[in-house]
Amino acid sequence: MKITVIGAGYVGLVTGAVFSEKSHRVLLMDNNEEKVAELTAGKVPISEPGLDVLVKKHLKGGSLQVTSDIRKATQFGEIIFICVSTPTSRDGRADLTAIENVARNIGQNLKRYTLIVEKSTVPAMTGDKVRQVLQRYCKNGNKFDVASNPEFLREGNAVYDALNPDRIVLGVESKRAEQILRKLYKDFSAPIHVVDIKSAELIKHASNSFLAMKISYSNAVAAICEKLGADVEQVIKGVGLDKRIGPGFLKAGIGWGGSCFPKDIAAFYTLAKDVGYNFRLLREVEEINEECRARFIKILLEELWILKGKTIACLGLAFKQDTDDVRSSVAIAIIEDLLKQGALVRAYDPAAEENARKVLGDSVVYCDSAEEAAKGADALAILTEWPQFVKLNFKKIRKILAHPLIVDGRNLLSSQNVRALGFKYRAMGRP
Ligand code: NAD
Ligand code: UGA
Image 1 (tube, rainbow, N blue to C red):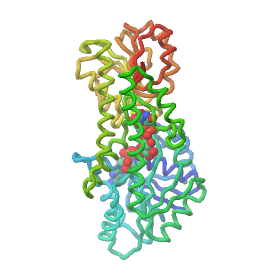
Image 2 (cartoon, rainbow, N blue to C red; image 1 turned 45 degrees about the vertical axis):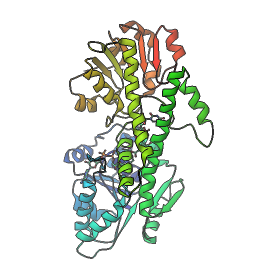
Image 3 (cartoon, protein in one colour; image 1 turned 30 degrees about the vertical axis):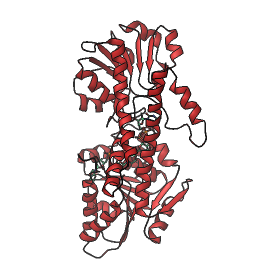
Image 4 (cartoon, rainbow, N blue to C red; image 1 turned 90 degrees about the vertical axis):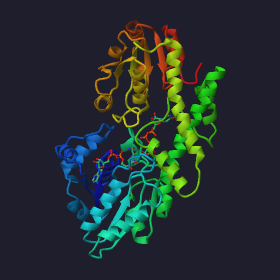
């Protein structure tokens, strides 16, 4: 099938690459000329396991092409996926400027029946707005359908998730749209859940909010464990063994960040408010998340008393492992808190330094390894759950640090192992 993907970010680029891999022809469009030039030259602008190989293979083979020309993009695909950004506005609502802009441009350039699919995360009822905009700008009477096909991939796992989704949600309003999307996804083994457009939009917000709620639940339990001297890792393992609860998304620590959970929860809360429901549970989910950061800083204060002038070696800048993305990263927020208190920060991240520099500038010392970051530091803080941090040479790090203190914001290490090496080890909700 011929597919247009508008927006070549984490979702659009992965979607384009994955559909190319499934033998479709894809034209990827982005209004960021620099990004288009980079991609055209075969350079993948984000760090995502497996993406580089896939994109290069299909760019070379010609099944994946890139453009900044919206007219060409609109007229290429029998399906157009909208994958542009939907950031948070100041009032918490999703800023849908890019969605409106793309819908308008598509409307102006439509030449034949086309299925226009929202893949960006949008509040319920956006599909109606997109349809209205298309009707307004599509003057030549061309037919189209609007559909919603929310994306559930995780960064750091994006290619795998896009190729192996748990489910495929199709929000449609015509048999024709359903048939086109079923044909597109016929080689995927996931169950297909067909609903109306607003239900599809709601499924996405409700899923992200639920996942964030699970994490906040664990973090609240961790706060109680801290007071009682219990171990949240053990408690949550016991909880997650119940098949009705499941073990996923219960890892306690400094909380959730990233480009999606914070904005999607805010957008879902405001959507509920706009339609007359006070979704207060989501406010609690956010508040518990904020508290984690404060609890982490409190541990450092308990250990070091005064942070001013102290050097903290921070391992991790990305919002999670296996990504270079620092959008709403809790690691960055904690580093900013430390800097505000006058601490000196030496930071190391395997992939996110370049993006972190755009936020933190030269306010921290960027290091090429964990050992370098640890040099002379008063404490080692683990802020991102990179698996390679578990395998560090802690014997060596013990000698490099000025004081053998580890504050593990991701509950990544075995307390037994590091204590055996002579460290003082503090973690989140663990004795
Ligand atoms: P992103 O910022 O990485 O990419 C968005 C891309 O859209 C950028 O390259 C930008 O240049 C382009 N763009 C913006 N306005 C445009 C316009 N008018 N015309 C053409 N291109 C335009 O964002 P992302 O992380 O890929 O997220 C995109 C959407 O997908 C968001 O709604 C997000 O919530 C949702 N989503 C993201 C993820 C994720 O893991 N990142 C997962 C599922 C859903
Ligand atoms: C999340 C969802 O998992 C995806 O299904 C969804 O498609 C995506 O948002 C989106 O809509 O953009 P993502 O934000 O990429 O994916 O990454 P997650 O693995 O969900 O992690 C989010 C945050 O939660 C990270 O900061 C991570 O460190 C934290 N986390 C995750 C925990 O603190 N504990 C956990 O048990 C899991």
